[in-house]
Length: 161
Picture (tube, rainbow, N blue to C red):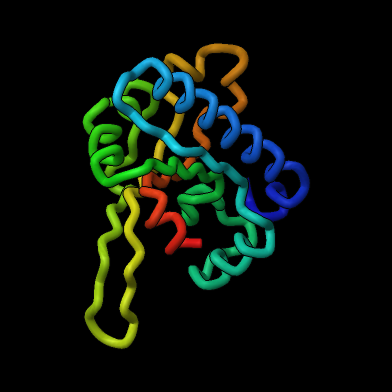
């Protein structure tokens, strides 16, 4: 999908995808004890923001947007404490329910070096639906779409906002 296709209906598909990822995550978290999830947010990237990102990357007008931007669909899981984030990571929920793209995933830690100090803390996992899930009719239209799942504490979420 290119940026024009995204603007003309593709954004709605990514918004639905993000919403489905949230449903999967909520169901998986609800099955586990000890995971204290405060809330989950989701969104599809605004067209203007995506255009800016593509321009910065020097992407051609017909470029596949999913190859350039990993956060077109996004979810943010907000937990109470660092311990909650750790328990979620150890739970296996992401690996059990999605294909994780470890090369595009990133763990953000504070960096106080230089003039561009960044105190953002987040685990950002890039996922797609598994082949098994995509074989189901209700998920087939999301095959190949990526979603960035951010995992943070309430304090880190407040800082990011």
